[in-house]
Image (tube, rainbow, N blue to C red; front, side, top):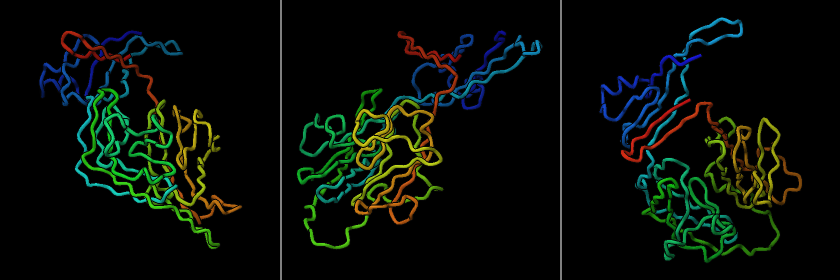
Length: 324
């Protein structure tokens, strides 16, 4: 078999038509290769190549001609935008609980995921708090959690977002103020406080789960923050995989009430739920509707069989894109 011709399309439209409508100098067709010049925003989009192939021999020895179309390849400029306009946030917890600080107005970060940490007011620029510097903190996709909060944790925190590709950072102009109340020392007998969901802010149902998309090979954290609860995770329509409570190197690890999956694979896709059960209930039932719970739908995106090769010309900074 041999390639007779290769054509390119952008967002479903022929490159030749795109060149006629825009700046012709943005594109150069060099045989089967497409060269993009500069890093203009209008170059963003879905690119596909269409190949006319002849001499394809079938199993019955018949020789035919066919057309192959690659899966779309999304091209986006690397960037980190400013924080959206938002207001100061206030978080109120008791000593010993888990505090969840939101990173509101998150910038658009390409390529993602962004790296998030928090700086406490009064600390230096090197005082970025995250699980990379202290196991008492846990950075997530949209905020940070602090375990076993103590009075010294109280204060104002600022979210810092970093684009690992461009090495650029943005600091939120608004703070999150954490207030820590003393723990209850009431030891009088009585009915214990029931489990309470803190984050996400509301329970949901299996038919309306929180959707989480992740690329194969990345890490993901499914967040669940409870008080007065023992947290159990379940994977539905499948055997729940072994989840470690102590081994920080484990691929599936429950960190406080959260589920962390390292190096996600296609088999990790599915429905997960976290259950906040009373620690005083000797025979709790996950099937009963007497405790707070949250459902997550995890979808793992795997790479296609299309190989993308991109090379940058050092002299003129143009890019050459080739698929095979």
